[in-house]
Length: 245
Image 1 (cartoon, helix red, strand yellow):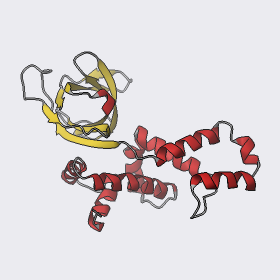
Image 2 (image 1 turned 30 degrees about the horizontal axis):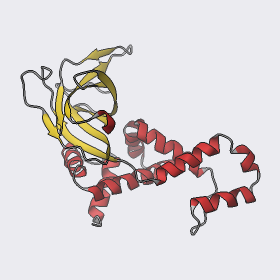
Image 3 (image 1 turned 90 degrees about the horizontal axis):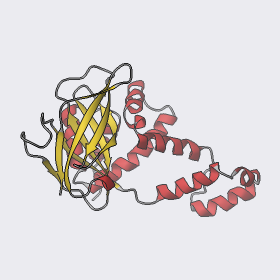
Image 4 (image 1 turned 45 degrees about the vertical axis):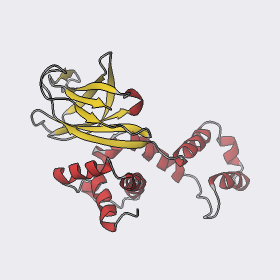
């Protein structure tokens, strides 16, 4: 199904921070069930990075992108790759990457000598990025429990698709945070605790991304740690419970 121009605009507004909290939550709920919307999001990520590099975004848009998507590990990797690819002469419109590369060496022989480690890494990255990316699933928004598993509300059930690579979950804070507060997060699988990536935060919530390989079927809880001004992590005594079906 081809997305409407309205939905395409919504994807861009989501990436650039133009949606209200309510609109953002509804959009993320749609990402859980609409593959076309996820595909458009992946395409738009590259487009806004190019606009950012070209200086085509407004100052508020640049600041939002820097503080959110570009602050994530995925955003930094995409930006680094975009910069590296931008330094090479572009391929002809009808040439594939592997047809273009030999012609580049013929036109500029010095590139062959320079392509020891940097260009090799670039080639590998270009090949990997051409493969279909694993799907990022946006899970439900979770509220905190005072106790870990015993008592309180029942854990939220999440169905994780087989092709999923990452699960994003938004965690509502028990109380509003002061601007600039930083967080760490840990995943508890009843056997051990492992750190997971914090990809976004605001005054009322923290969003984490968890590799699907850490989430076989079972019961889990997430724990947040607030980073103090001196860099010391302080545990927030609340737990976010969920089950992977």
